[in-house]
Image (cartoon, rainbow, N blue to C red; front, side, top):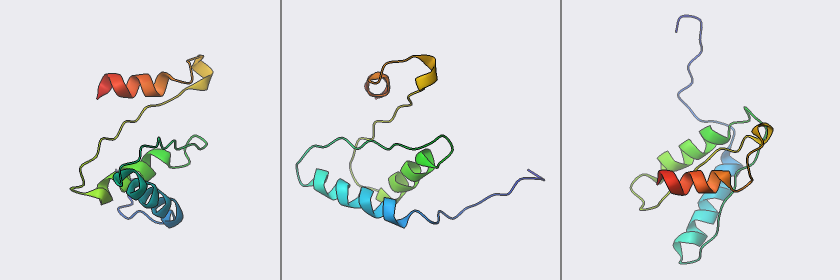
Length: 87
């Protein structure tokens, strides 16, 4: 790790985290709604979800996650199917 920078703080995504918190409250009120996080490769989608999940702490929730690789010719439903298979 000699030549690598390590960041321990999550910064610059307050708007997205607030939106996830709002949507999670909507879901916790008894309504169901899928949340799909989209973005370019390397834009921080996985880190955003990891940070949101960490901040939930002890909240009871099920998180389904998957990856879609368009260039591999997979189907758009593959992330959902993978999530269900791995949960």
